[in-house]
Image 1 (cartoon, rainbow, N blue to C red):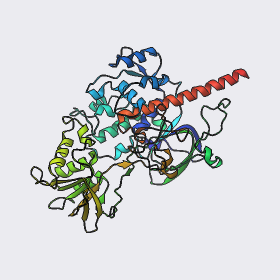
Image 2: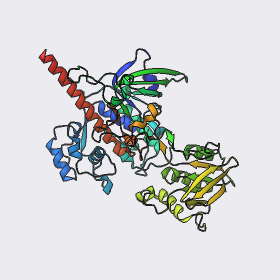
Image 3: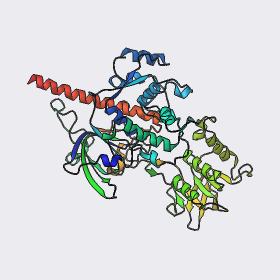
Image 4: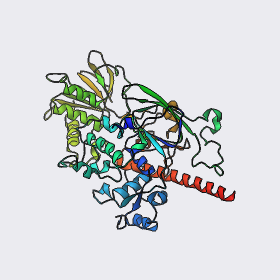
Length: 502
């Protein structure tokens, strides 16, 4: 039975929950796993290749990782995340992975009832989030093992689905199926509510707080309250879409709110004239649908692809494999060290290096040879799209060029959709009053708790805090779990103390 039929939000009276997680992708799933009582411990015979970290772990072997000092354990570690807990947890799960080693995890997981924290996870679709909307045939950037969540090996799951595993990488369709299965096999379904759309998130007390204390916690006597969390910090409104297409509105109250929405909701735009014309798209899926229907077959004008990332490269490959001519436009120089292609091992990602080679050798300034149907325009930008299927380009030197195209694909990244927050959450970023972006302006959080430094009892993890790789977002789940557990234990301790004193 679909999860949407199993779990329906009540309409009246409103629920009040300790934790509400918005987003049911891998970030929300991993956090739900840990809040449900699954705890990582150092395995009995495990020896981490980092002797300093191993020594620290031995000091408190009897404690679970969330019960330990994460700042102490993270000290001195380096990795491909700016968040130290993300680096710590990744090196515990995949020791020395960035050096090409395939060491086993040094952790073992135990299900414990005591630390369970009631929560729900709200998502627009089935568990897995945006992975269900991605093209299902292309290979993921990360290794399949790096896409997995704690307690369920991706390779073991994949072997049960296909006879052979031909690549260490996986398709997005496989990853989406894995996440959906993960929620079921780990018994997390009761926490997940699908087909939910959030329209508003506000603090009920906000109107009663003056501007000087707008970002301060409500004035609650923390030493005497008998509640494990401050009450009703957040009011969440939205609707749940039923099987018949009708919308059922709901209202929830949450003591703690966690943002796990990812970054694939809103494609980035160029902001140029004609970008909303019918032949201009921001989706690889739309392009592939047009290819599948034969709309671009035969002698057609080139498809314009804008962008120098992996999504743009996927589109180039799709066009190339279907004999569709391509004009590839990007702002960077081909020798820019920050191009993603320069960070990928050629042996593991041959198709992307093929695109990069084309970008370097098939420029409009050089004579076409190996790939006559592909032409790159490095250090160019789009000035405008015209209704007559023409596009105006401009070089960094100011030279303009008008080209005839059959379709345009703008693939320059995406932004999170935080429209349910006041001013789309602009106040939460590192740069005040600027849109939240996963690279330039992520949500500013405490490094060891992932709590917003601007809004108490608001947490964020995953791409919203700059952890765009799944292998690193799990550290955010660890940090949030530890923080909420400590607060809950403190509250319970105060309640017990008050009872004894009485």
